[in-house]
Length: 353
Image 1 (cartoon, rainbow, N blue to C red):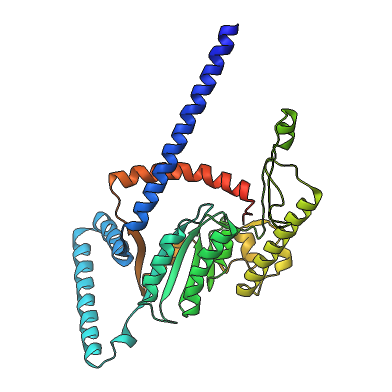
Image 2: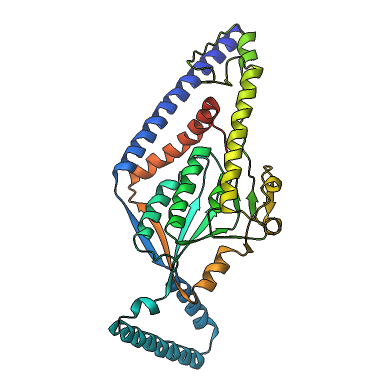
């Protein structure tokens, strides 16, 4: 029996050592990957979505139509293309090209995690678009998917979208699945919000949670000390003994953050009954339309394919060149980020939206 006990302790120590080494390796890989990521030069990629939709349409035509009808359709399309080209040349000679030019729609994607890390690419994409977009004529469509996350991170993401509004660039937000909490903070900046019938929106509230191990430490005669300068430098702790005064201050800070959130939403969606919808509840698309949280029920595909009939659509994305080492580093970084972000959020008491 003593042998099994000693063997169990040996395995526990070995496992602890292995986990510690793995954590160090993961953190080191994360730092290296981030440094390379920051140093590597990215670039903006632009894809014409009109061409994509046209190719899909032509593939179906070729499969469905008989040969004679297909030849007539192709002949008609070429004739129309020549007429359009001639009209553009004529307009260019008269100096009227800008007036006859089509509306341009720039399509962006934002897939939000707890730290809104996609903002790093979003800011570059918006910077590129602002250099060429025409105020009050062109449009930006953002396919948004996010359940929310850290307050300061989503506040920064929302500020990137505000840049478009300040430059009078029409912004349409498409929510196919979820834009809740911090995700809805971003969505409400749009001139127009579209949602699928069962998309999840709302959750205008603030939440924070953390475990407390004080009683466990006390039971095992382990002391934990935390030293601060400033009465409210630390209100609640993970290992120390929490007080009613600390809890009251923490709740007060949550309420202040919630009030800032409500004020922000009200500024961009004045038609909302903010007292009714800012309870932390979520609504599905149809319900959200009734509460004026969104403006229209439609999927992003429906909106974009209809817009392609009269506008030029461009998918804009900011990309980094990734080698094998970068991909392996990002895999390690992603794993470490999930562990470190959860730990940091609990220790630092950062509330989530």
